[in-house]
Image (tube, rainbow, N blue to C red; front, top):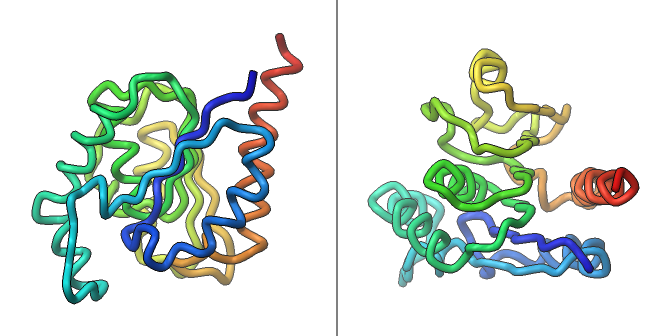
Length: 181
């Protein structure tokens, strides 16, 4: 039986998410996948969906709404792959009791103030020029694994090299576990 993987989009949701099909192409034969559009989880519906407007919506209650909806929708322990806002939503939901086997968060935003980590293996990936990277001390104080990829910025997860890297890391963990049993 395939492991379950929950994928959480970035703040743009499905609107600018053609890159997500590459992840699905690599992972769907190995995982039972559930996908969530973070704008839908947060009940964000904007006429003018600029980056500033979307960020304001997430900051002004959207993040909490998305966490609450994810906690209602998900009760089965699963692996999580999350991008940008999705990484923050998954992290915060795990702290509130979301059953999580692992979290692979790419360019997660706004976590630098968190003082608690999910009760599962957490891997975080950021680009060198990503303005969202918490300080090195933050990672070590929480015991979180992080990799910073040189020459990439915040949208690194849309690049084919990073897509392959993230998928191989996820598959490596699951395949390794299967052989340990």
